[in-house]
Structures are given as C-alpha cells and as structure tokens.
Amino acid sequence: MTTDSPIGIFDSGFGGLTVVKAIQAALPAERIIYFGDTARVPYGPKSQITIRKYAADDTAILMRYQPKMIIVACNTVSALALDVVEKSCGNIPVIGVLKAGASLAVQVTKNKRIGVIGTQATVGSNAYACAINALDSDIEVISQACPLFVPLAEEGFINHPATRLLAEHYLTEIRQRGIDTLVLGCTHYPILRQVIEETIGNGIAIIDSAEAVALRTRELLMESGLLNQSSKAAVPHLLVSDLPQKFSMLYQLFMGSELPDVDLVEV
Ligand code: DGL
Image (tube, rainbow, N blue to C red; front, side):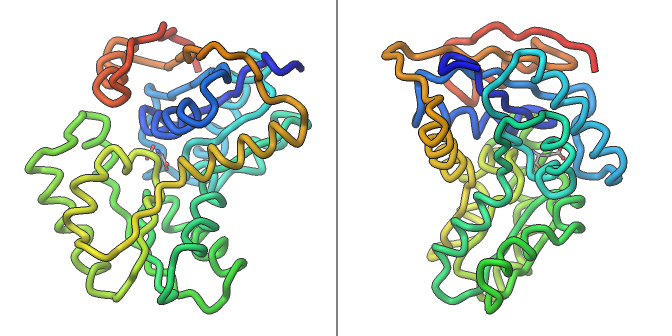
C-alpha cells in the first residue's frame, strides 16, 4: 500500500457522490474509486440480512483495487453493517458516515434536541440515537424516515414540486419538536438540501456528514503516513452495477464537472 493507492468509497447509488465531492474539495490529490450499487438501490427499505450481504459484496468490489482506506458513504450500511465492511477488508481503516455526522451534530446543538432524517433501515436501527447518546446522554433525538427522498434524488428532482410536497409531509412533525439541529442521515439527502432547508425553516443547523468524513479521512491518512502529496488533482474512477449512462447524467448534474469514466461491474 502506498500514498498513491486509491480511497475506496461506496453507496447504494448516487448519494455517496456528496461524500466524493467533499473529499475532492479537501484532498484533491487523492485517487478515488467509487462504487454505486445502482442495480440494487435503494437499500433503505430492505432487511438487515440483505443490507449486510450487499455491504460484503460492495466491499469485495472495492478491494479488487487495493485501496488504502474504505469510506462507507451510505448511512444505511454504516448503521447496520459497518462490522461486515471492517471484517471484509482486513486491516485497512474504514470510515462510516454515521459516526462522523453524529459527532458533528453533538458539537453543533445548543438546546440538546437533534432531529435525524434517514432511510427506514437507518431510523429503525436507532443507530444515530445510540451514537449521539454515547457522546452525550442528555441529548434528545427525534427521528423521521423519509424513504421517498432517495428516488427523488436519484431522479434528479432537486427543486421539483413533488420534492417540496414530500418534504412538507415528512418534516412537519419534526419541525414542531423544537430541534435546533437536523442531521441529513442519508447521503442522498444533501442533493435535496435546498428544499429540506427551506421546509424545515430558519434557525435550524443542517448537518451533512460529508465534510466531517473528509476531515477524518485527512487525519487518518496523516496518522498512517499515506496522504497523497501530489500537486496534481486526481479524477475519480466510477463503477456502477447498472445504467452507467444514467449515472453519467446525474454525475454531471450534481458535480458540475467533467465526466470521468463510468464502468459497469457485476454484483
Ligand atoms: N444513500 C444511502 C444512505 O445514506 C442509502 C439510500 C438507499 O439506498 O436507500 O443511507
């Protein structure tokens, strides 16, 4: 393993690109290999057994590229199967988005009332509340599953009336519970951030764990002497399990940058 080895990042689909964007901004020289499991998205409504199987498959795909680190850019996998990823990749470091988001939210809240929105599996696992309360047991966590946000993001409905309607539906109750911080507990949700922010209203801090993950990545690479010191910006290598053309279109829409190669892999 060398400083030039890639960082492997995966998600069920397109949402993990929010993490890729943050890593690129913080660590432009790092080579990224990204896998989006577009054939099997969404993970959120599936059972724990299935999600754990998918997590092992996704890790195995990235391990073919001998990464120096794996980032689980999927809250659902971070909540239900982080141990599976850790076991499947030997002794390389693994970072999950959930812990990063939880600790950032704990630092930000003033009134100790944190809202968390995520997939059904993430909310049902109670993993955010556990991670937050492990850091501060006085914090109240109010959670809401927002399953239809994932297909809206995958469709690129960034500012669509349907997204506004569903945001109103999902966020009305949580808005009335006096939270001062809202965690976007699914990596697809930052794609819909503008609508979520406008619907939840002023004065509520929005937590996107992508930046916290980028900071943690830098720390870990420095600690292990594996930070890429090149002055050249790297272009990510993208892998998907279905519909590479659709992924390309969404990549351009969301990342606003030139499209790297998107390769199809079998899961
Ligand atoms: N983006 C994923 C997450 O952070 C999962 C969305 C899904 O596949 O349901 O949970």
